[in-house]
Image (cartoon, rainbow, N blue to C red; front, side, top):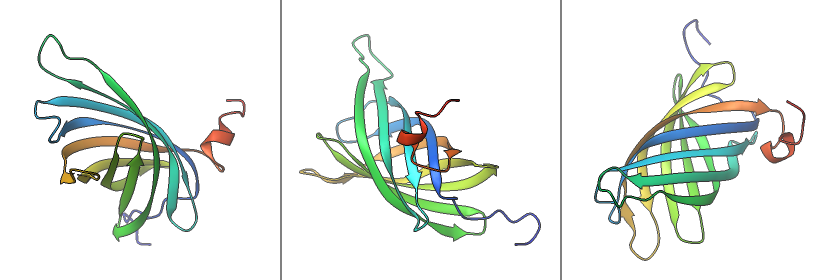
Length: 153
């Protein structure tokens, strides 16, 4: 790897992530704010799985209410070009299935920045979701996050 080139690999292990942004879908026509956190296990075969929690709220109106959801996540990633990684992630809850594509770049040892590039809602009314998020992925240990969370800090 040449000097200045960023490696396009996510080392296997446990990761925590967070993101925030703005979704607009057929059910979210008004501006909404979205925040989410989760844990992932990234495997050597470039697959990933984990859990995600999200909260959304409409940004206008006195009757706006926060809504929360929990998702199981799965997906994979690939090298996009030098220094960039593309991940496809499926978010599954009892109420909906969404698929997101993200581009990541290494920001430091064990830390990656991410942005969304595509979102799609599956189900009875499949459609593209106009969602823009940014966030961060951070390595937390060599094994699954759920097991690592029992270890002392």
